[in-house]
Length: 191
Image (cartoon, rainbow, N blue to C red; front, side, top):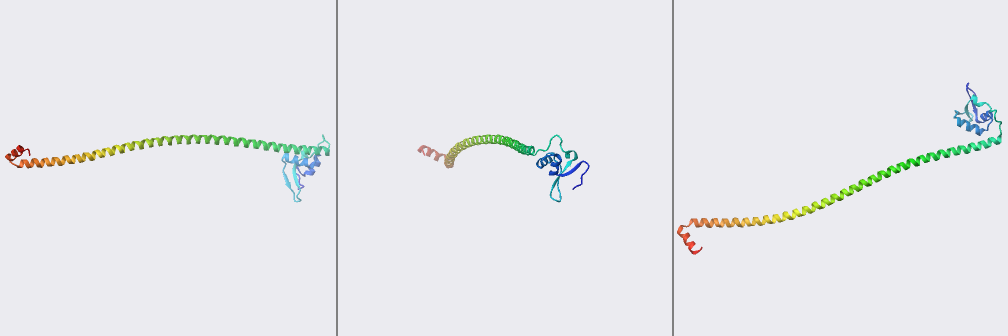
């Protein structure tokens, strides 16, 4: 892994820290922040591909262990704050999305309730109509019963009239079969 290309150099985090004049922790954060490629060697040590321009010691600052420790703490704190802010933003987005879903569900529920009320009202009207039809059917059945009773009475009267007509026909035939003198005699007697 000692092979360096023209524009990069493979360094451990400690070597990067020494080259830049910063702590190992700062070098690690720098490598992650810049998203430099990382590989683990056969010896188990991680190395990062550092552009040659980044391996130069920064001349504007002298290494100071106390400042590095404070900067490390600030970096850690700012990293934690960034993670928390990202989490809060993500949770806010999820809460907003959940609220929108809840609103849509509430609208659907209200719509379903309105449809259920309409169906219940339609059912009530159909029941009223069925009750009215049942009453009309009862009245028609009563009228039918009355008509059948009248028809039965009319049939009985027709039978009686038919029997009376048959008797009159027979009596008339019997009278016609008698002679004129016999008829006159019966008429005279009131028979």
